Image 1 (cartoon, helix red, strand yellow):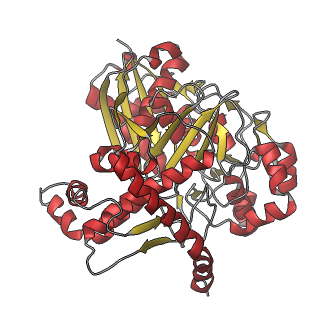
Image 2: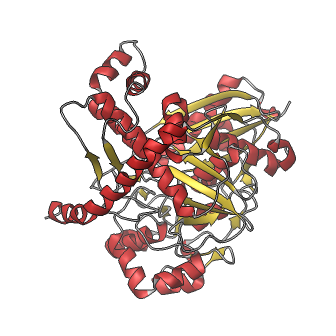
Length: 509
């Protein structure tokens, strides 16, 4: 039997799984860590945290499986959107922490790009706009604000490609990671844009010259890496790419016209398409399969699962203490209580903008907000309103595509563990929801990509893997009620937008 590994470097943890080539899950391991937030709206991580977590998760998975190393034939490594990418010096060592996707410090740089280059030119070449979300604006921030670090930096590498370099000694970047940097990548020709880089003063030498498909083998494990991980020297390491795209691959999305939402710390809700969807305020980059033909058009919350975790950590100390003492999982307790709360949480609406917001509203000043509180409301009401807020955010993302999506959408990520939340997503959006059988979406995609890359699996074979569960149908009566609350959700933001901006200004004084 042949086996494959899939590793996903996430925002809050790195997970590795081992599967056989029939699609059976054999072993897995998760290593957790935190994001550094030294200032409001800043978010960064030291890359060696990712590297050590990757090594530990791979090593532990291999040990748990007890599979001879020679039977493990390849690994693909996906990763979070690393924003700017890791700035590396001439010795390929990190110059500073990596400014990740969540970081929104580059507001001035985004405005400069819009003023000096213009949105139309950006859309024409890159199919993307200007916003602190994009990696190229963070690169410009570093250039403008940290000249010493800028001088030291010789190359920017995304998280997964940095780890792959450390394991193989080979430097490359996959198409999805390159495209997600935004404004310096030519989506028409699928390469770096000299015109944009010259206009922004970003030297071409700072970007990896070799751009690869997510199914390409970048290199083999070095002798040292193989010994450390318990694997064979030279074992192929496949590129993979951005983790939310890998999650779509893990859901079996290998062709155009399918809508899937990967909801973890953040939400990436995307339509995979072989035709342009320009001018809809969406984020777009080459897909992880057939990258020169297929594109990933997505919107979605900068904070999704993150706000629910924040609620648990901040408001639920009693439930957490009970859990630590051997009692019920805190989330399970909260879900049971929230299930008894009616649709609309008795008039509570939450805006889930706890770190500003990216597509489709593109507003760094957007704030997390709870509207409608009264003395009659309980913790369970507020918790359910948080769940509903993420579902409203998904509906907003769906509507931003302007496309008919068929009768169902795919939903992946930690949210699928909650039966209540799955039903809320169906009821709010009005679409049937289909979730994966196993909670290993990005990792599953990595295994599929590793199989295709090594030639152990074909496109047709992975399509036959049973990865999806039964449909969850929307409740028509609940959907009609949610329509009213959704309109209020949209209206609240419009009415508070100016005040949110003012809060940003006066808070900085």
